[in-house]
Image: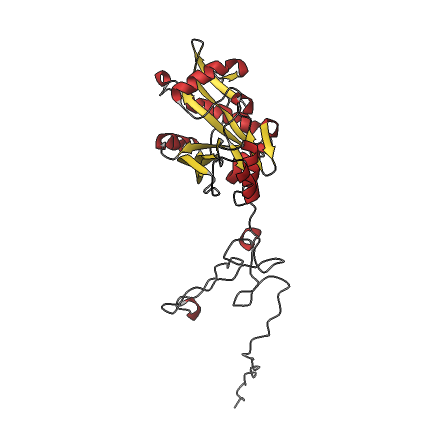
Length: 319
């Protein structure tokens, strides 16, 4: 009788998990694998590195969530500080100040932390920081007692100052505009100012003064030698240029003349590396809808208001 063959004895296998090694950098998943992260997810507010999906068996305990529980999110990792730094203000939040202290400085009058356009160029003024009383004192010294000026975007004024003519407005920026030159548009200059002022008086697109044309490029369309449509540049600050004075003679509306001019003005803005933006009255829903259909996107709501300085010069020193 042959001896029965014996099977080799199996080696005992330990069920203990090996110790986890520390990752060279970055967080780990609960399973011990190193997390994958990108620069964008690293700086995303309220999240840590994004967790990659893992394949789990159906019914696995790790895929179940107890009723009423909430997913755990990793805290944002901060570099060099326990609290995030305040973001720098966007130049479009105080566009008039950025223009008067930037590309339009030659057209500005300035005292300390306040500036304004020359009286025959523009109606706007600005302060560096509306929360700084010293800036308002500088504006009072710049304008003089009982003087009025347009101060867009300012929500409140110091005691003794008065406001009037508040107009809720919107600020839109170019995000998808098809900018292109228009062969039918002509560049306008100081010699065309009388015609521009006549068209502006009949269409009322906004304030236009005898030397406003110096703020930037203004284009027009003529019909039988007469100016019937207009658009141009107003505020210009580093990286941004405002499209303004968009208007069409009532007898020639519905032909797309304003659209052509907006695209032509934007083409020149892009050519020098700037981005176009514009302002409109919030109540002018037709114009806002037109601009959005052309490729502008609402950025913020703002207010246009006129402010008047206190009536005595001594009030400036009391601010």
